[in-house]
Every structure is written in structure tokens, then in C-alpha cells.
Amino acid sequence: MNSEKTLVQGRSAIVVGASLSGLMTSLALARAGLEVTLLERSARKSRTGAALPVAEGLLGRLTGQPETGQQSVPSGAQAWTDIHAALRDAVVADARIDFRAPVLVTSVGEDRRSAWVSADGGEVLRADLLVGADGHRSVVRVSVSPDTPDAEFSGYVIWLGLVDESAISSPAWPSDLAILYEGDYCLNAYYLPGEDGSTFTGERRLGWGWYDAGHNELLRRSGVVKGNVVQRSMRPDDMPDSLFKDLARAARHFWPDPWREAILDCLSRRSIIGTPIGEYMPDRLVTERICLVGDAAHLPSPMTGSGFSASAEDAMALGDAIERCDDLGEALRRYEDRRLQAAQGLVRSGRSFSRSFAPRGAAQ
Ligand SMILES: Cc1cc2nc3c(=O)[nH]c(=O)nc-3n(C[C@H](O)[C@H](O)[C@H](O)COP(=O)(O)OP(=O)(O)OC[C@H]3O[C@@H](n4cnc5c(N)ncnc54)[C@H](O)[C@@H]3O)c2cc1C
Image: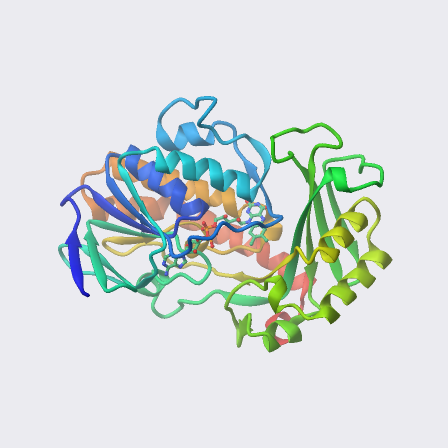
């Protein structure tokens, strides 16, 4: 059944996508006084091995409130899942944010009076501002950059895994991070706090991300990459036995313990995810009522290690611009002025890694 709802005139926003960017942006917009409706297509909690650097006092800066013991995002290198859980708790506790999942947004648009989203159940929602925080395959990006809506496959994948340190018998690595190059591979491996936050040796987790330009044919055959466009991540159910064998053989040959042991443990449990890497260079971030943040706005190679911090900067810059300027179109232009060049620089720096790591790009 079709239904149409218009949110409060003058002070309302719809945010599409409730991953890290969408959660941070919703908090920043609520702080700026907007009534926010946050829409997420997935009800599933994902578990990846990705680790992200969290700046000191992130949640306080987003919400404008002092952090408390119950509500904070720990700083330093943190597991993606832990950051997501802490931001989600803060969003759920904020009465100005209406968080709805699962809601799949199928199309978006704007006119002189409002911006709108259409959801798969037939519902149409209208608000003053629409924010696309919907990641690398953004639906909202099509409205901002109709001529260049797609991120491009960069010609390599990152295999990710995470394991409790208590399952690993090899001696600990002497530092918290290792970046190792061997043959056609690059391994980023790191210690993360345990699920209870412990940073003591034996109680942490080992995360690893293995860049691999040698399995592109498999990515295409399984449909996770089509043409030049990444469709989705590859999950264990999509992975043939031969892939686990290939990776185990290469891990034994190339990587030192404890990372070798961690990788073999994840492979034996079939607990890995493969994310084909895409990159997107923006030439704009806004229209009159629509804007993009995070990976929807700019998609750098994860090798830059900065996609998350850029997403946090987007959220704060957008919140500041809205708070300081009554005219929405002008606020969005200020947001773009503050963020576009930095975002382009970040994507450019990732591209130089991609070109040296996978020189033939998507063609290989
Ligand atoms: C493997 C990997 C390693 C990384 N490592 C680092 C690092 O070391 N340092 C760093 O700073 N950054 C890193 N990043 C980047 C960082 O994770 C992202 O920049 C950051 O998490 C922001 O992502 P996002 O929320 O913008 O997008 P996403 O995480 O892609 O979230 C988009 C959300 O939108 C939802 N959605 C999409 N379409 C719709 C729709 N039509 N309707 C409703 N909902 C929708 C999705 O379900 C999802 O929840 C890494 C990324 C990857 C993939």
C-alpha cells in the first residue's frame, strides 16, 4: 500500500544507511536540532575483521554531550563491530532520532519544497534534507552525480578475519600492527581489544586483512563483481573449497606466526569475508536538498586507513554547517566547500596504492 509522510517542515532530515556514517551523521544532525529519520535495509549484525582508528572523544564531539561510562566509543584501534554497537546504542538513546530497520530505500529525489525517499513497502517519506550514508553502491549518489554514479572495481580483494588470541598458541608479535608484502600479496595484521575490552596479552583478538589481486576471475564468476562494479562482499557460502585451499597454502608459505596461525584458524572455521575493493572519486557532494557522506560520498582504498575518520569529519562538518546556517542550500554548499577537496585527496592517495598493487586494475 502506498502511503506518504511529511516530516516536520524546516527541521527534518532523512538519513539512508545506518552503518558507521549514517549513525554518526544522525547524531550530528540531531545535535544541530533536526528531527532525524534513519533508514537501514539490513536487520543483520555483520562481523568483519576490519579495525578502524577512533579519535579521542568522538561521541562527545558528535552529540555535543560529555561521554559517560555507559555511552562512549573507546579511542584507538577498535573492531568495526564494537564501534558500530557503541554508536547504535547512542542513536537508540536519542529521542530525536527515529531509527527504522529493515527498510530498503529504492529511489530518492527532491523538488522545491522537500526531498523524498521511496521504500520497498511503498511508503514515501519527505523531509527538508536527505543524506545518503548508504555506502559504496549508494542509491542516493545517483541523484547527486547522475553521470558518474558507480564506484569502480580496483582489481583486488581484501580477505578479512578475526580470532580470539586465546585460540592462538604462537608467541605474540612484538608490535600491535604488521604490514607485510610478499609476492602479489599484502597483509595488514593487528591486535584489537578482546570482546570485553581487555588489551592484556592472551585476552585480545587478532584481526587480519589480506590484499590479493590473484582471484579476480573467481570474483567475477561468483557475481560479486560485474563488469567494473563491485556488487557485494563475498561470504563463506559463496566460496569454493579450492579458495580455502589456495589461501591456506599461501598463508603457510608466506606469512609468519602468529598471523599464519590466525589466518589458518579462520580458514578452518570458514570465518572469512572477501571485500572486492572499489574506489570512487567525487566531483560533488550536494544538490539543493540532498547530500552524501562517508563511503557514498568518497570511496578510498582501505589501504589509506582513513575512510572512517573522513566519514566522521563529514558528519561533524554537516552538523556544524546546518547548525550555523538557516538557509539549507547555503549550509550544504558550505559543507561541500569544507569536505570536497579533502575527500578527493584521500581517494587520490588510495589510487596510487591501487595502481602499484594491481597495475592492470579491473582488467586483470
Ligand atoms: C575491509 C575494509 C577495511 C577498512 N579499513 C579502514 C581503516 O583501517 N581505517 C579507516 O579509517 N577506514 C577503513 N575502512 C573504511 C570504513 O570502514 C568506512 O569508510 C566507514 O565504515 C564508513 O562506511 P559507511 O557507513 O559510509 O558505508 P557502509 O559501511 O557501506 O554502510 C552503508 C549502509 O547503508 C545501508 N544501505 C545501503 N543501501 C541502502 C538502501 N538502499 N536502503 C537502506 N539502507 C541501505 C547498508 O546496509 C549499510 O548499513 C575500511 C573499509 C573496508 C571495507
